[in-house]
Length: 96
Image (cartoon, rainbow, N blue to C red; front, side, top):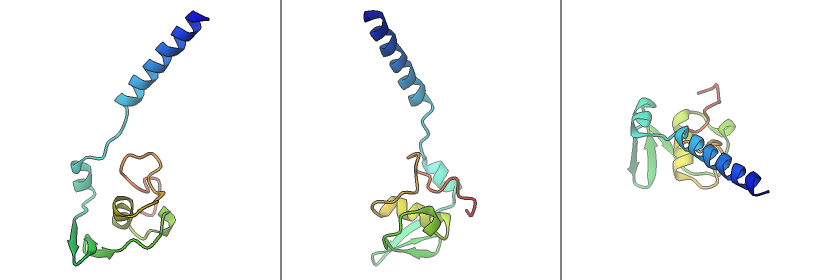
């Protein structure tokens, strides 16, 4: 029983090391590549010359652009557009 426990702990530690090494992180270079510029004017967010406001939408199917999806995931609560939590919303949405 002791050997099985030690083997399980070694396997778990190995899996954690593997997962940490393969984790993706959104960097400022990635954001630059997406060509997303953001500014705030009088409480309204402007991304790529488009104005966005949090209005309760949560899903990729409700977005009209990648910039809008990025805005919503960054500024609005309860969004469900970044399933793998890598900072890039709607990655599998072919419309963007």
